[in-house]
Amino acid sequence: MLRSLYSGISGLRSHQAMLDVTGNNIANVNTTGFKASAAQFQDTLSQLTSGAGAPQGEVGGTNPAQIGLGVQVAGISTNFSQGSSQATGKSTDLLISGDGLFITKMGGETLYTRAGSFDFDSAGRLVTPDGSIVQGWGANNGVVADGGPTSNITLPVGAIIGATPTTTATFTGNLPSDTVEGDAPLVRDFTVFDDLGASSTVTLTFTRSLGASSYPTDGWNVTNAATGGSVSLAADGSGGFIATGGPLSTDIDIDLSGLEGYANLTTVTGTATNGKAAGTLNSYTLSADGTLVGLFSNGEQLAIGRIALANFVNPGGLEKAGGSAYRATFNSGDPTIGTAGTVGLGSLSSGALEMSNVDLSQEFTNLIVAQRGFQANARIITTSDEVLQELTNLKR
Image 1 (tube, rainbow, N blue to C red):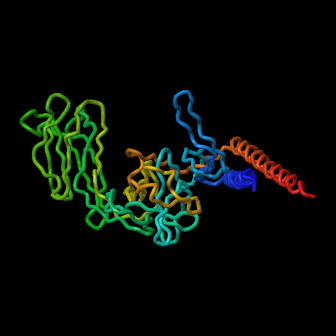
Image 2 (tube, one colour):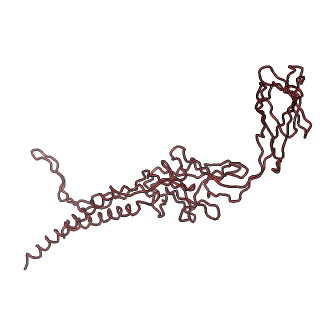
């Protein structure tokens, strides 16, 4: 049989594969996180009809004569270039700006994806649309121990953060030096919390005293009626005070060093610098490094977990597993797992998705090229058939 007949058949098969790849790219033009593929061709074996001849004396060398036996698909590569971003406004939609893939688990199998369209299921786990669970690191008392084995990212619905007692308070502002002894005292309140989170009010009374101290004589008396504690503030001559006596409270360290004593200003205020009531989880936010931050009813913000990203030495070696996901292969190498924004990994943006990186203009051009290549190879088969027909007509 004619070699050209089989060459034409191999051309039809190869260009059909190119059409299949191009058609799949176009079909996924709006698929979140999709990466386009491209088919590469290579020639098959060539039949050697005469070998190369070495030059000898008065005779020059000759080149080998070979007839090719067709074409085959050398490989189908995946283009991992960044796709365009689309804002969604949904807090659980995540976009990777740069390299890296999300890590998910489905039925014990670890998969990787660029599609960041996530939601929380009824168990509080962060999942993909097909139910794969997003992986990362959990937090203990707001501290994320990243770098270890990953686990399911879970939002602890109904979580309670314990109360913390107030141990320090600070007073700042100005006590007016133009106040005279006998004027109405200044009363300032601030709220504190005990070990169980119950709140109470501490009241300090500032009374003007021109003889509060031997150095210098100008100052104020500060008293806490609830505990009986008192402190004398003596002006230091440069707008500040020297405190003596105390303490104002046995449980709370009350700092008065920030007070000043200039004229015509009454701005003294006090506040507890720590202490909170117990609180429940109200909402959450996602930061650029993938940290899931819980917002509690008592105003506290604590890290709940952190989403992990993976990168590969050869991402083109990943195998498509469906659902816009990939699985690792021997040629992709082992994943390098880390936090978004670190070396080799991109940052995360909340409320946006990465769209497909399919270039429609290029894909339609590839359609034309594949179609014409298919037609040309079909013409080879037609022509070879005509030659065979002529051969059979030699004997009538």
